[in-house]
Length: 220
Image: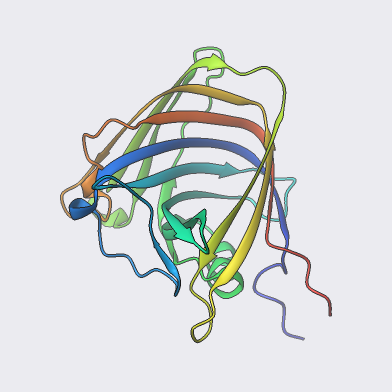
């Protein structure tokens, strides 16, 4: 009997997440392929990119680590996002992300330190796309300055390339207590994220003890 290489959608995940919103000149952004009908969200001559360092913990559909990059887009007169790059340390997550939702996940080594919630410091997080080099391709650091009271519900959606010319709409539902703070990112010159090296994000935050649902239930 063949075992399914990844769980069916939706995925119900839990863990901790560090998020940063970056404002980048459109001329500095990579020319990522976007699904038909989606175009970069432009504020003047700048685009918006969001980075997510995520530690998906046991107790959810899968447990793995991820660095995901999303570009803000306009689609059908609304604002959404397209996941344009992602690295995970789980083959099942890679296969599922690509097959179910068209997220271009790649395998990598991700090094996350033990959390220190009392200090507000998160990181440094390291991404090694070439572990043999011994040097991280990307390093991220976050610090929480302010905790927002309560748990908050945040719905969103991804617009991803689908089969043919049909985009895939991926619903996202996140509940978590949030923190607001600062972040920094350094990237090697050859890294896919070199365009963010040394920049300061517009906004950075933390979602500890989140519950996250990706995708929708499909009828058999």
